[in-house]
Image (tube, rainbow, N blue to C red; front, side, top):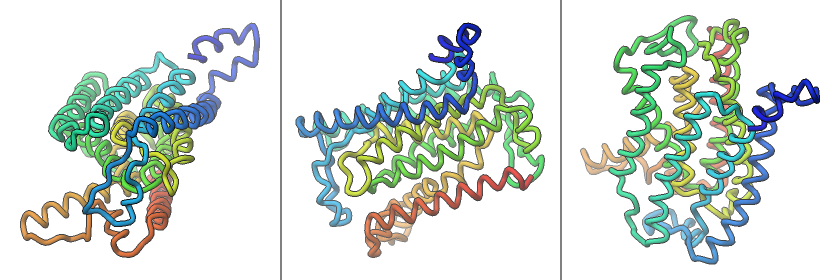
Length: 361
């Protein structure tokens, strides 16, 4: 909004010229979303505690988690509001990717809120049935896939997917690209949801992934940089960096309260839209496969659940002591903070590996 109001006044007051720069608006979005989140989170914590809306801990989980019983949750509402407000204030609202992200984030946020509301307020242990959540996610991802098929990010690469680290090597998915987009968005959304099980774990990794993708988005939106680094050029993709900056700022604000021992949890309200938006960003800037590397922690969490369920159903045996993967390490004797920090270290290393793909082409 500020871009549309203040940038046109640059001829009257030259300092307003700074609003044209994505870097300036991204830094502003970080600080704004951080302050919004710290303020809103404090408000929600007080109100959720007063209303008795808190976390229910599984009896079959690690014993150390029993102390988390009753901790305020649904903190994702504050994250959602902060990110939407910050993006609205600092991003260009005539950018199609920003409009899609705002709409997608709101949709998935409301979907997660419905699940949290039924579980925590209505005391329905099932919440929103998994099938209905999946249908909602599929609806958004399918609509996005159809849109990108008709209005691709780059028409020259409609159904072509870049293979990282290889120069000018692409796989043409054809019509299967629609299914591929749906898979990416659903996988990212549920990956973050499954990772959200330890204090500070999901949000710390989200901050790192968002930072890394903000670099790729900025480069993809700049013709000179993308041409030099052999990154697919996506007109308007640079503006996505502003949204990701808002995610980083809000993530830091949430981590202020969610770090061990957590004072509040995000719930499905936060994890579904945060993960889903990362999937949307990956397909927007045509860096889909890199999500497997950058978001490797989320991928590992999803795979651990899939392998555990498959193994138990086919052989009656468990591969891990408990799934998702972070619980396995807890039951192996790692303290909760140690699991979180080590997963964050892995995430940083994976992001650095992903960034090396910019030169290894």
